[in-house]
Length: 322
Image 1: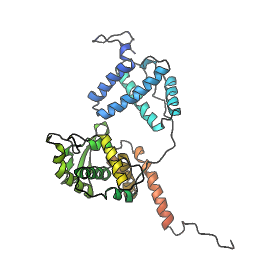
Image 2: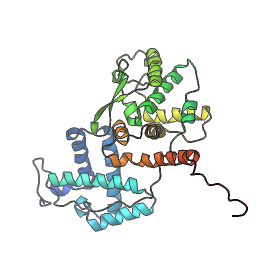
Image 3: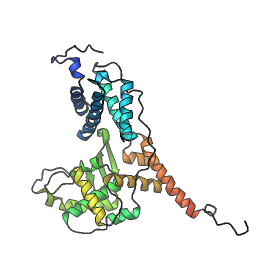
Image 4: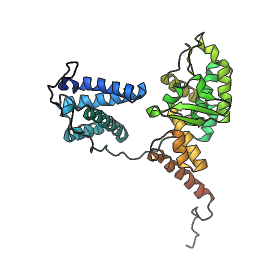
């Protein structure tokens, strides 16, 4: 590890570079420029690291060099006690590990203090999904009103191809290949995947593309596939609000949000196909263990079918003399 008083070519000391804010600025640039992570991903990393830095400061730690396995375990345990989920803490620890790998590479520290620090385990809750009947109800509103035409295409596409919210708002007008029924998506880690688009979604997209110029307000250079009333790229927040409103209008009691459509896509596809590896590829999961949560949903479905259909599965009432 470098001496804290060592300076680089710009005259900045190692101690300065290890300050919480300065290190995050350097790490952010590294993720953006060298790793080419999306702005959304970089922002998420920095937000998690900022929370960890604030917690370390409360424990009297002045900079990242003061982090060690003991105080990091203390921070993680206290944040879990405050209600942060194990999954969120696992993500937060992953961000810290990545930061320290960067600091080690820069010869600013010698060891990674969270290399062996585990995240607390949560009880594995299953992701919510919509019933197929509710999916169908979501698209019952019919109107020539341009916003509903756009929203129908947007939500049909999310459910048809299992897209993340960040992925769908990032789509450009040329991301859709209507001839081959495909969409090109850039997902986490700037990884690109090409996904099939269903017949209903393609029809909705075709209608939207006919009306898209109405929303551009003369801004014909705007590349976004889905645009707002201002003729600019539709924001993630607007998508969330529009979906919630549409669900209420169509009488769906459940809280409906974009990722729920993605969960429903995965669950319904797995119920029909049983092909976990294909679902993993379609969702863009790097690790199949992330996809395996849907096998629990699939088993519940199979168990209900079994109970209804198997001649010796259902419990029959005992006879009076038994």
